[in-house]
Image 1 (cartoon, rainbow, N blue to C red):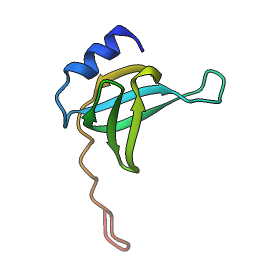
Image 2: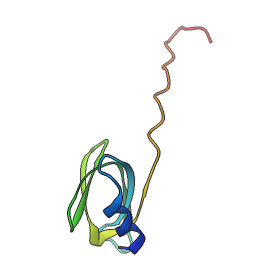
Image 3: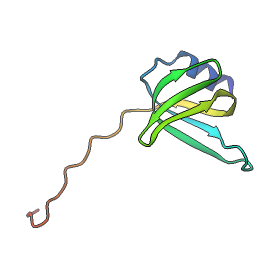
Length: 84
């Protein structure tokens, strides 16, 4: 983990919306992102609540991390047969 990512994850308040890039094991140079709300942290891992559930990321696997803005508001649906 980079020092900047470590310092960010140690200092950012819980319930902050973040993206955490981390290495995948068993795949050469493969990585993925967890995008969601930082819900927990220990000295070894962080938990990010994503749309698909909680992702626990080992700090040793973190490549980068940063705060991100809230998701955009949902767009209104167009009903079938409505005029534009």
